[in-house]
Structures are given as structure tokens and as C-alpha cells.
Length: 227
Image (cartoon, rainbow, N blue to C red; front, side, top):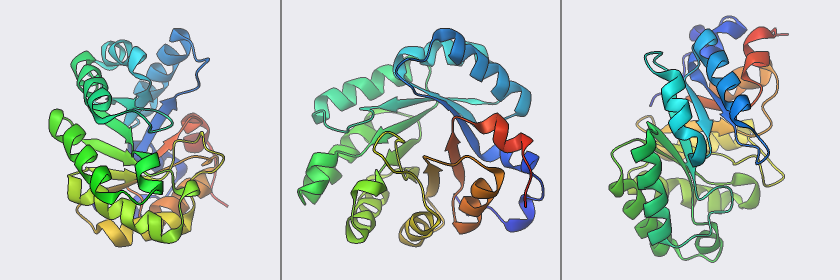
């Protein structure tokens, strides 16, 4: 999943194919989800990312649009056991998720139990037939932990590594995106997510090596302006 060439982003509208339009607030309603799907269709975003209980509605609403239905798994804490994570991922895929955004097992990672993290990721990724983005929650990790987490996700077969849930008091930074790209190379995607609120910020993430952007304000991004 190669980095986006700078010449591909000449105007804010050019951001659209790289945006996952997110509706992840616990208080979000089904009407909020339907509105996001209509916006994604209109602007031709990459995907609509929701909690698993809304993914079937998203898949129906996006039918024939080319916009992907994306579901989060073990979100936002990454604390469930492997069996529960596998079951949740399989159910989300059964309901129509075409991609999954899976939180890495944070307690194991923070404790340095790297083999446990790797085996867990392999189990979940191997249980579903759709691309999996592994959320690292970079704001909670040291630089060395970010490197290790990205390497583990790559080795486990992740399609992408993703910076953040947006629910841990920190989001994506240009520096973290560049670091993750350096670790995973050009065959794995990098998704920048959390706190990206302007078209200029989104373009900076893509320039640093992101191949996908997660944002709840995607319409504002493509409707904005570059400095």
C-alpha cells in the first residue's frame, strides 16, 4: 500500500479517495450513520467506519457505490481475549464489513509480551477474509514500542497499521506516520487517524507516508482549502 505521491493531492477534493469517514461516538444514532453513508457516496470517500452494530446498515446504504463498509473490533481499549476478538471480527465480517480496524492488544503490548501480541493478531487476521488495519494507539506508546507494534502487525499479516482510536487523548502526528511508514515499508498501508481537522493536516499526513486518513469531519476536509 504505497505512499500517496504528492502530485495526487492538488486540491482538497483530491483527498476524498483516501478518507475513511468515521462515525464512532458511542452516542451516534442510526440516522447519523445513514447521513455519513450519504456523504460518503456523494464525495466518493474510501470507506465509512462504524461500530459493528451498525455495519449491516452501512453495507446496505453503500451497496453499489464502491465505498467500503469498515467496522472496528475490540474498540477502543484492545483488552479482550483472543477468542472474543476472533468471534467479534468474524461477526463483523459476516454482517458485511469489507475491512476491519482492530485495536492491538494493548495490555500485552505495554507489558512487553510481544509473542502474545503476535499470536493474537495472527489469530484474528487469519480468521477473516477481509483486510485488517491494526490500531496501535501511538499516543500511549514510546517510540520503541511504536516500532515494535508496527513490526508485529506487519509480521502478522496486517493490511495497514493505524495510529489511533481517537479515544485515548491523542491522535495522529506527522512524525508517527513517517515512523510507521519507515517500519512497514511500501507493502503495508498506514492509516492516520485522530485529530485530523483540516485539509492541510490531512495532506501533511499523506505526504509523510499515510495511505488512508480516518476522520469524522471528512466533508469539511474536502470542502476546505490549502494555505
